[in-house]
Image (cartoon, rainbow, N blue to C red; front, side, top):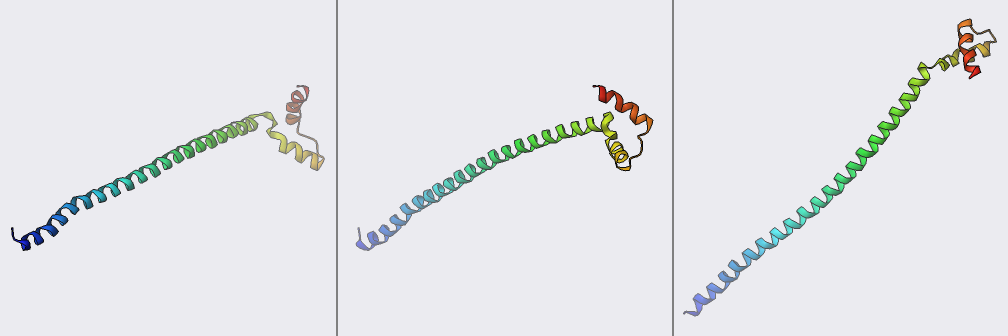
Length: 107
């Protein structure tokens, strides 16, 4: 073979061998980035599940408070504001409120 032809084939051979290696390097880099993004997504998902659990606990707490408020409003003790105003004004309580207050004192 002619040395000039060998001189042309060596760079061509080097380039043709380096291209698959470069492509493999790009592919490996892409896989690493995708693994990193997947890991971050899993962390975010676990964080969002903690957020959902926290919100569910807050909702349950608010529902419990609402039940207590409903009990207070529907209870006979809701006339407390009227009783306080009666004490401030030193006026006698209406008879209906006094009748309801009597069983409360006994219990």
